[in-house]
Amino acid sequence: MATSLKNLSQYSDKNIIDIKSKKFGILVSEWNEEITESLFSGAVDTLLKHGAQKENIFRKNVPGSFELPLAAQWLAAMEEIDAVICIGCVIQGETRHFDFICDAVANGITNVGLKYNKPVIFGVLTPNNQQQALDRAGGKHGNKGDEAAITAIKMLGF
Ligand code: DLZ
Image (cartoon, rainbow, N blue to C red; front, side):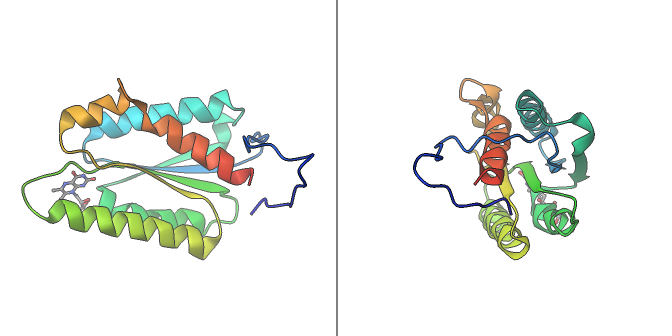
C-alpha cells in the first residue's frame, strides 16, 4: 500500500504517480474473447502511456469471469505484484446464471483487494447484449479497459 498522508498544499486530486517500477497483473477471461481482448489492449495501452514498463506487466488468462476472484487471489498473494486488473465480460442471458456470476465476481474481487490490501480492479463488463459490450470495449462509450488501468494507477497513488 502506497499511502502517505498529504496536506492540502501537497494534495492533487489526480492521484497519478510514477508507475515505472510498479508491477501489474492482468487477468483476462476467455469468455467473450473479442470483447475481453479489446479491454485488455485498452488497459495495457493506458498503463504504457502512463509510464509502466512492458516487463512489469504480467498477463494470465482464466476460462471465465467466475474464475477471476481465485486467480486474482493467486496474483495478489505475490509480493512483487502491486495491483491486479481483472478483465471479463458477462453478457445477460435468459437465466439467472448472469446474476450468480456477476454477484460472485464482484464480491470475490472486492474481498481479494481487502484481504491483500492491494488494488484489485473490477474491469468486468455486465452488458445486456453484445452490442452494449462492443460499445464499451473500444466503441462509442470508450474502452472500460482504459478506465480499469487508470483506476489501478489512481489507487496506487492513494
Ligand atoms: C457459463 C458462462 C456463461 C453462460 N456466460 C459467461 C459470460 O457471459 N461471461 C463469462 O465470463 N463467463 C461465462 N460463463 C463461464 C463462467 O464464468 C465460468 O467459467 C463457468 O461457470 C465455470 O466455472
